[in-house]
Amino acid sequence: MVPGESDAQRLMSALVKATKLDPSMVSERHALLRQISSILWWLNPGHPALSIPALNRYLSLPIERWIDDQYRQGFEGCLQVNDEPSTLCDEIALEYDPRTGWENVQSIVKDVRDRCQHRPRGDDEYRTFRLFLCEHPHIHSSQALDFLVELGVQFKSLFEQIPEQFTRAGKFYPCPSCGWPMQIQRSEVCCGSQWCEKSVGVCRWSNGQLYRLDTGRSVPAVDAQDRYRLNTALWKFTLIPGLLERRLHDRLAKLGLRPTLWPDVDLSDVKVEVGDLEIWLDAKVWRSTRMLGHRLANTDAKGIWIVIPDYQKGEVPSLREQCEYHLILTESQCVTKIARLCRR
Ligand SMILES: [Zn+2]
Image (cartoon, rainbow, N blue to C red):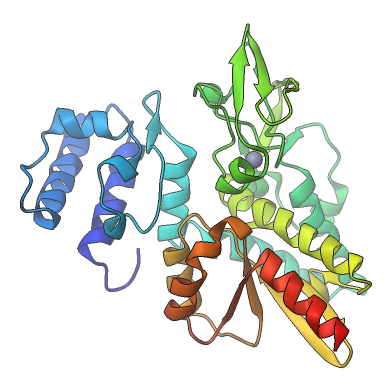
C-alpha cells in the first residue's frame, strides 16, 4: 500500500480486502468490516457507527453515496455487483497496490523490453508486442503465438480465465470500446472502465439481447469456450491507455507530423518531433487522478508530458499541484499545444 498510509487509505484498502475475500471466510470478513466501521466512525465522529449487516449492504451501493469524497481518493461506483467484487474494486486494488498493479505490469513489459533491446529488430518486435496486447482483449487458447514464445512470454502471464459471472449461456459480450468481456449482470452493462463508459456509454438488455445505448446496435456475443481474457492489470495499464496512445498518435499524424508509438523500446508512449523539438508523451488512464498524482510525484519527470483523458479535465489543476515537475495535459490540451508549436 501507499507509504505513510492515512486513515483514508487504510479505509479503502480494508474495503477492497473485505469485498475480495472468499465468502466462506466469514469471521475474517467480519473482522475487516468491524475495522472499516471504526475507521468510518473515526473519520465522521458525528455519525453513529455502521453495523456489519449495514456495511455488507453498502458494498453494493455506489461509494460516493456513503463515503466522503476526501476519503475515497475520487473513486466512484460500487465495490460489488451481485455479491461479486466489481471491476472498480479490482481497479482500486491495482491503483493502490503497486506490487499487484503498476509494478507488476511494468515487470511483465520490462522483461520483454529488456529482451527486445538486445535483438536486431527489437524496436519493431517490442511495438508488435504492445500492439498485440491492445488488439487481444480476449484470445482463443488455440491461437498460434509463436512470436510470444520467441520473446520468452508465457501465455498465462498475459491471459486469465473469463470469470463465470461474465458469461451467459456459454457466451460473453466484448466491450464495444476496448473488447474486454463486459460485466453482464448489471442493468447498465459495461466492461467497468471509466474510459469506455465515457467513450461509448453503457449497454442494456432487451428481450435477451444486449444493445448499445449510444448507437442502438446489438452487441454480438462470443463463444466463451477455451477463450481467455487479457489479465486485469494488463487490461487496465496497457490496453486502456493504449486506446488513448493510439488516438493521440492518429491526431498528431493528422497535423502532418510523424509520431512514433512506443519509440526506442518504450522510452515513452508516443514520440513526435516538431521542428528541432522532440516531444515525449506518456498517456495515463487512472480511475483516481489522486493515486496517479501520488505515483507521478515519486517518479522521475525526464521531461515527458503526461496526458490524461479529456473527461478528467477538471482534475488537471489538482494533479499539477500534486506533481509540479510534470507537465500535465488532457488529450485535447496536448494536441492543441502541439498544433500551436507546429504553427510557430
Ligand atoms: Zn471497455
